[in-house]
Image (cartoon, rainbow, N blue to C red; front, side, top):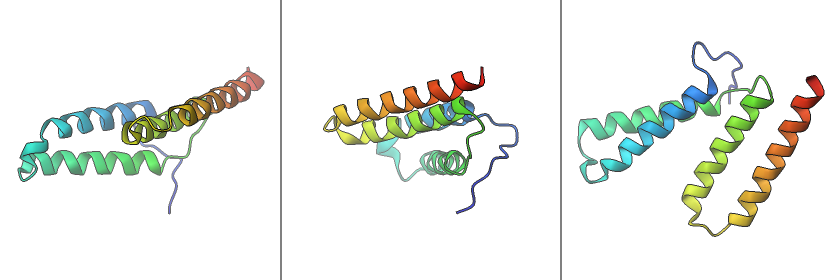
Length: 105
């Protein structure tokens, strides 16, 4: 899979916000899954996810944003069964990105 460190104009945090907004709208249209609006939002969610997926983080902040985004998705689909695991992973990401960014300050 091609990974890009060129993001054009979009920042990772903007892409994540766009994904979450489109996903939220999509969930609101669950009963209208046959409409063009639903299919359009579904395409937007998929395309935005692919953009995030292909992103190579440029720094600790982008790495943290992407890792937290993936953890949010996992938690949303987990049903609360692995809360302790998610908490441990979040602590690891926070610790790692804090250590890395503090080495360069």
